[in-house]
Image: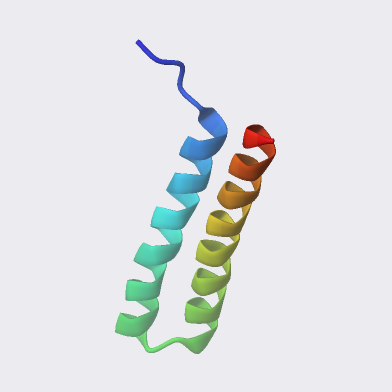
Length: 57
């Protein structure tokens, strides 16, 4: 059994939430929700890459 990496799990959940919210924004035709969702998704991927780079170094 491997150790659960909670930070990666949290970042993955944020990315899933952001991607799902983009679909909701398209359905509701809301630019504000779309911008916030894209920002959440991009920041989740950015921080995951940053954490992975720091753990590899």
